[in-house]
Length: 114
Length: 112
Image (cartoon, rainbow over all chains, first blue to last red):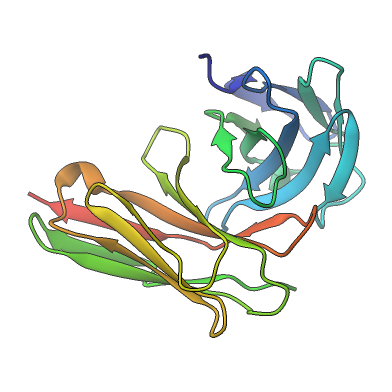
């Protein structure tokens, strides 16, 4: 059974640009959540999608957005990149509820903003 | 702001030693407590999801307990091995479709 796939794995952008990251969940999983990890910080919750609907959103500015498609694949977009957006972005999929289902993580997309 | 605290931040143990870490969280509106192991250059991997006060779960040499009334969970590793070296994360969810809040982790290094 294929795991969670994130693309691209690494990318470098400059300030002011925008970026789109992709996440393909495990087949059958309907919940996809996104997290940001920066040095010294735990995983910070960005948002969760379930059946194409955003169910919850973390404390991030509106420059961070996402969506989920009918096949459960999800994308997150960051516009007007800032240096502080440099981070590892992880997505995770879950069979059902984000709250009680164990999360299956991808390997992450490491974004560097110059 | 929901604070999930983990202690210690890091520790080094000798191979064969047993060890334990703590995850502390607000006990109100508790829904579930997750533990994950995150090895360097890999993805976080789920260890346990616990929902009931008094829950005890075990996977091989690793076990966890949960006290929702006082707001803590312990993770135990018996007879640590070098392959146990990783960051151990706990995460709290508080019901329904509430987001999961992660602690900053305990980084364990097992010295051969």
